[in-house]
Image 1 (cartoon, one colour):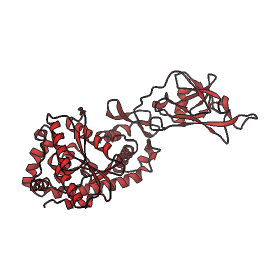
Image 2 (cartoon, one colour; image 1 turned 90 degrees about the vertical axis):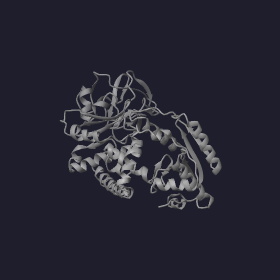
Image 3 (cartoon, one colour; image 1 turned 90 degrees about the horizontal axis):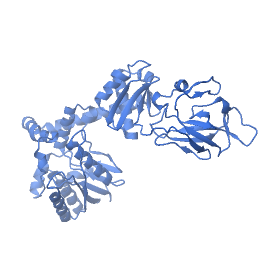
Image 4 (cartoon, one colour; image 1 turned 60 degrees about the horizontal axis):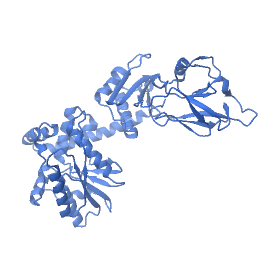
Length: 455
């Protein structure tokens, strides 16, 4: 089927919205830019249009491509933004590194409520599906590239996703468009290029209509994934405690299939709420093969992520915890706290505040000076109503995970321990009613602002 600009109209925003076109200067993005400009000229597209070109600096022709893009945009009377980036290889190779850098630039460019259009087409979708399948993806990956998704402060849209590369090529030839050819596109060392150059032509020759079948499969996979998400979200609500831990007893009330779906749903929620990268299939397998079956007194760890940015799952007290990278090492000394103000702990450890109590607590005058420190070893404590024991043995009674025991703030007065965070007040300072003076009863509150110190 021939391509015409009018086929884009159902996928374009109404009104005077700020829109960017990711413009490489290649055929696909040139056709998209030409089609959008044609619609604007016809009064069918009212948005403010800007082209965005990312100069990766990987080719000796990069500067010539910038000049070509500028000439084309000048001829269309469209502003061009050129962003030069430095691409560094990561663990997944140069191809993925360049793509991630490009996405970062595009994400930063999109304005509040605005759109960025990319020229991904039906052949790109097929290549993506096959590429993800070869990597061992699940339903989420097999649903393919979304027609539209949130990005930065706005949205990314792929209005050509239902159009074949051949249809775009015919349009480009008919309108005598001139575009650049990236010489790296012919290098079959890159996985996607290998699929495009070597594999996809064989599929087309044998099964000419495979695009539609694969697109239908992607739609069915998307429906399956949405159903999986819906069920997972409902089940997760019965298992999740706070944001940071799963109740193993509640989890094991479900079938194994639903348990796996619950864990995947939790990872998806953490990815969306805390930008924690979702782990791969192998990590989820370790959860069910190593973490959950472990003995109660064992402390297994499952981890993933890059060096210096490792995320962990730990088991403690019949729960599975997410543990974020801990960059702050508690100091060995104590710091003075004027209790008239909140006390900000170092790094990601949160804040201590006084909260007036209507019952029992510590008798203080706001402005009293206390000290704050951390466990050093050998501390003996007597919680109110309990016997004196070592802090090391008492913290497990309050369900403090081992990895947080040296990071839990201790509150002192005149070198005597007053309280351990908001877990308990020591017997010497515990009052059941306000004294007959200007003091009032207060409780300590440890405001844990993220997952580094939640329990």
